[in-house]
Amino acid sequence: GNVSTATRVVDLIGPTIEITEPAAGALVGGDISISATVTDNSGIDEASVSAAIGDLSGFTLTAVGDNVYTGIFSETDSLGGVEAQSLSVSATDVYGNTKTQSVALTIDFVAPAITWIEPLEATVITDETFILAATITDNASIATITLDVGDLSDVTMELTSDDRYEVTLTTEE
Image (cartoon, rainbow, N blue to C red; front, side, top):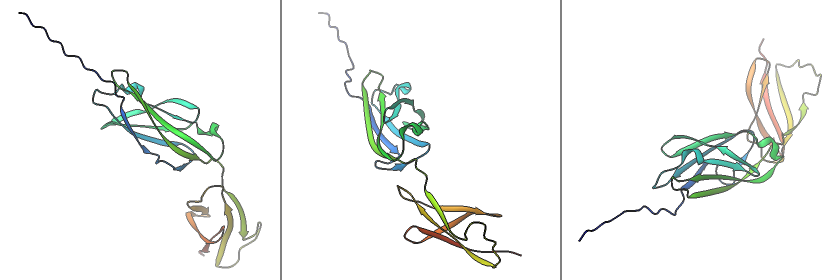
């Protein structure tokens, strides 16, 4: 007799998502760069790849090649000061299976507090070599301190004790 066969693809598994930036547990602030690798044996609906931080969702990530999707999340001002948030990346494959992957972040929008110690305000510096010193504190950690002094830019201040940062400068005649 007559034989008829048909092949059907049954895909019930959503995409695999690996959030590569920012790292889980990262302390972030300002614009947040997001990068994720999204793969699926059936293919990804590229328009479906999106990110959310906290209650802010629907931020589309863009395919940049090799299953990598990226974007800059710049709406974090509305999330407040230092607080734990969840970054989620969602994607849907071509058969409609959706998957979401999340990592925990801490978002910091509180600027460091700076109190100048040396020289005092309105001090005229007459020595060839002098120290600039300040107490600098932050509710998170301080990565680097740089400042511009006259024609010098990106001068790095070093931590000398507790919250005291300083740099020794020499004037040129």
